[in-house]
Length: 120
Image 1 (cartoon, rainbow, N blue to C red):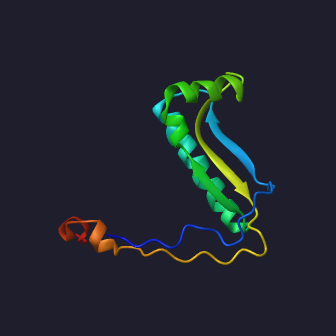
Image 2: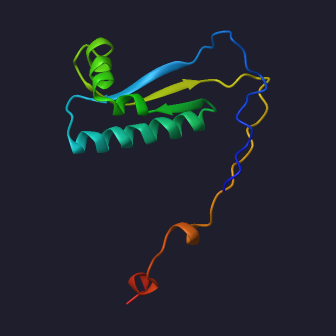
């Protein structure tokens, strides 16, 4: 069983923050579009990290087809298909650094055959 860091934020407030929501979307809803949306999401997260911004990914609501269609209709005006939502903002200056979470060793996760990777 994994032990996670305390999920409560010490600087929690009910005051609104200045975070913004981004919707990563594509003009078509194909497997290639999904791949491109994933690539774009990766680029967004990497650039946000480089800039010192905080991000939070939300994809669960888009897994419900009726809610996904509602977002496509009301937010995107039926011009695109949503794939993921990203909340983007600045961490409060008073926020304590987040604790690192434990990671498993690569060898515990990936099994590979060394003969496949041997040089010929």
